[in-house]
Length: 184
Image (cartoon, rainbow, N blue to C red; front, side, top):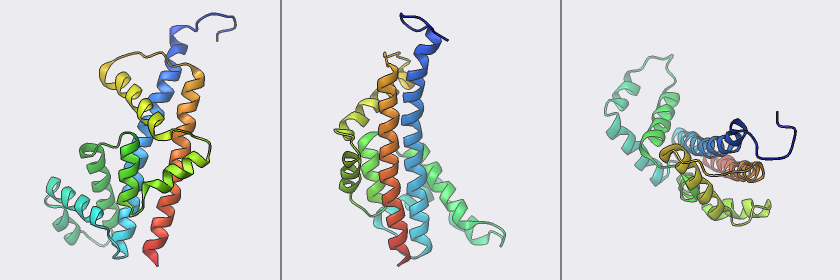
């Protein structure tokens, strides 16, 4: 533990970069998971969106036997869970869930406008959220994909984590609303 003035040692310099890397990566994963969850709820109730159908069509191209597998699966198989997992895998492997565009696309897949998410994020005190998210996403890419070591101090790293948290809360509110709407 550092107790005096001066630059932190190398291990402690990695912590803020790690926080940014994990926060942005967690947002990417969350967007895949929440989109799949809402899409499955919509499909189960017969309220699939056009975007949802396009995603399932793309999943079917990736796993052409999926429909047959689900049709002949035994009674103990969670068909919705299998489809959900296939959709999440598709998002992880085939769809870029990075930055502000990914947030907008996820919300649109749920049948909503992304304007409500960004308004909620800004109402929570996160100004210029879309721009800041894209900047943090680019820093994560620099670290993860190009091996760069941008200087990230604790304060900005905390701000990144707080931004991601507020975005997730706003997207989650849309997801809850979309699932409730599909049930009515």
